[in-house]
Image (tube, rainbow, N blue to C red; front, side, top):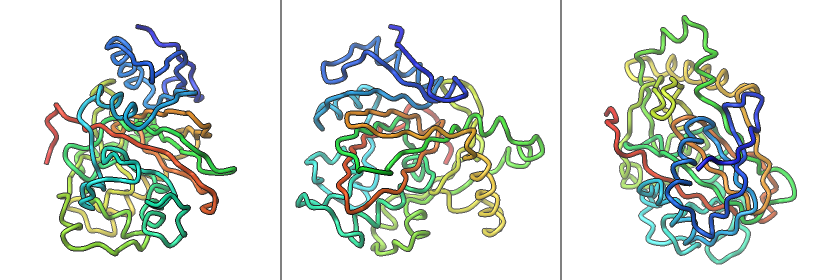
Length: 293
């Protein structure tokens, strides 16, 4: 099947809207394959006017591989407010359905989503696709930005490409939280997900294009002084997230956005925490490849 696709970015290879699909009604294997091919090219796909309950979102996501449980696994949670441990509750709503105080653990933890990152890059295997469904949006803010790491690598000067070609960074599940002062974790929680090491430059398996694999979970560059490595990571992130490489998504209720964590970084944007906001995220694991330790 050939999807109806409309590019959304000045670079037609990055970020696109897909029209004519009703995910709640179910899709066949040809559609799943077409979505995968479109993600290989564009990295981010937007599907408007979807009407999915949590179970339908989970079922659709499973079509792309085994699900990833992320921080729910680290926190040893057996269920969520949404009654599905497979769903990350990206909201400012407490388990009893009220808007959370800005000092609530949910708010503090979710603040890390406003840093550029690739979902669960801190574990091996990392994430493949993430799928975020908009249930309710605030009156302003709350956008999600996506940065094209393939185009970002293309634009690096040759000397910098050579410098980082063989370097690795270590990714740690709580590094982004610690940076923001969110340090209230037990040693068991800190140790729950082993740290992962990834090359700064990876090859995207679907397109064959090289890309930068960096973001807020990267704590340091292996075999480099910590300060020097963190400055390098900061420099790369600044170059990679210039406006020319970024698509900014303005959410509408019913939007369903799919992105390839192997090709893009993303971050949420500020909004009024006193206004209710609800999104649901499901994520698949990048299995079936030989990932370096």
